[in-house]
Length: 131
Image (cartoon, rainbow, N blue to C red):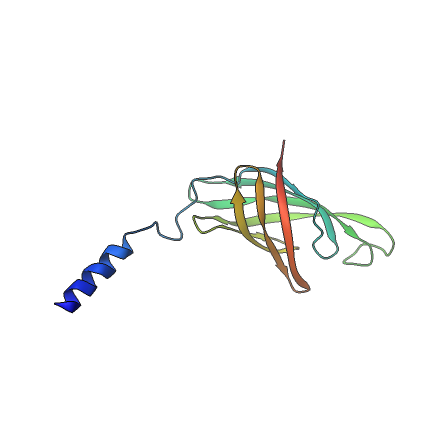
């Protein structure tokens, strides 16, 4: 009798929420900008497009301080690359190729907040939607 009750409780709880890989009902499509530095990158801008299945693609642009990568010492250089990831009911996970892995949450319609993980640290970032 106890086993039957426990089995019914477990089956009931399994149906209490969406699958964690379910796409979010809120889209991250659009242009985003952060004033937070990520290592030697700054003024990071994302141009994202989200498909119905939650897949996120796009590009990023940024500036970075000289003495890093191929930018001469004492100069500021532009950088850009692709973006790929997913937006699910759990959160946003995006590979910002060349910078790092972003994981975070969409707050309302105009703030994307989280962390970018790189080999040289974990950086808190806040992206704001721009026109």
